Length: 399
Image (cartoon, rainbow, N blue to C red; front, side, top):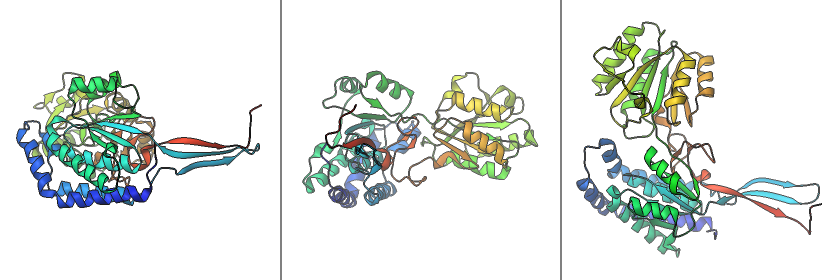
């Protein structure tokens, strides 16, 4: 793929900032069409679909942050000259063509395109039909920004495909695909993995856990839980499951207090058998599948564990591998938890809501990867490149 000079890429991003600012009202009108056609019963999806002035401010800021970041392409990873005189340089290189599949969030159309383009990739945006008007408008602005800077609009494309057409496209893409990033639930991920013929980088379900150790600071724990559960229920970093050490001091009183505070904040509660012995009025978890479920709603599960090892086992069995937190003042316990829990982000005495590119200092993100290859966690600009070896010889032959 031809490499675009950094200053040209930055000029495109500057054009997009200006176009977004100049077309705020038109973007809000396009989004209004999507909102009016949407079934508001799906609260989480509806929240993700909304564009308002604050969301536009966030889009503008995301582009500015990407523009300010160093261009990752051609960065030298290693540079070695062997005893034979052979010089071997490993550099960062674009993936090529990236396809991202996502639902509802028009701001992804901004962040994903900004990152992919700055990293010199083409990007194919497969947004959900519920955000079609918003996405069509935003991609139209991208095309204006590209054309203003004498670049082909093929760098950023919107795919208007239904499920069947998407399946056909994955099997026989119109152009070679180098990477697919599905942002969604298990069904979407399975669908893409089944039909794709290139690398798939999974941005998996949340279903995040928090473990309350017997040496936890209780007031701090309540504050962290409320933030993780209620701050933004539509986020993949929201809290869904709470595990409590059975031997925490004043276990029964604290459990009742936690239940009461959650209900005061409109959070519905489900409990395991042990916990149901105290919180008899709460709904009993009667299916194991619930422990695997990402709620994206004001709902959570409370469960009892025998200790750290039991908590780690349950989290590794049921979580989506996204984020998990421990509340404890015991450093030995927290270190063991953080080392042994198999998630992209592990926390000590902090809310899972920080698993986000901006909140983690990465900047704009394409997704939160729950895969282990080639990167785990927020996919920022530096993660949207692969590598290439440049080998310089002078008639060298291997003997």
